Image (cartoon, rainbow, N blue to C red; front, side):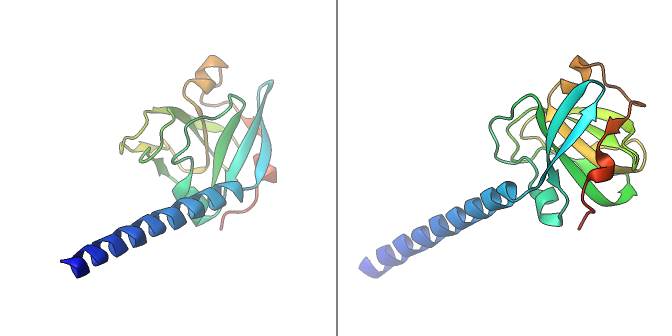
Length: 156
């Protein structure tokens, strides 16, 4: 009985330790993301840049807040009909899919902690996530161009 109890405590400690390492890895990946300034009309956007496979996989997961002028831009290695989802994401978001020149293809609203796919309506090179309604409240719509995408790092 004592051996089994000791093994259970050891397994629990290992599991908690692994969860801590995973959380630290996610936090480090999010802190390590470069930032870029983008523009939409007269509005300035301070965006974290998810240009690596790992950063694109983590995105805005596990975040509880995001200032109104901030967001995250995903840089993809190729033009394609990329899709986003909200697993482990607590913030309601709007995503604008952009072509290689920064022109808005379509904008989708996404609800927290769902696994629904939200996809580009045409091949996209970038996706910009902002707080829910950010684009609508500023009158930004498909066909509008965002500034600054030419300065984003190449996807890895």
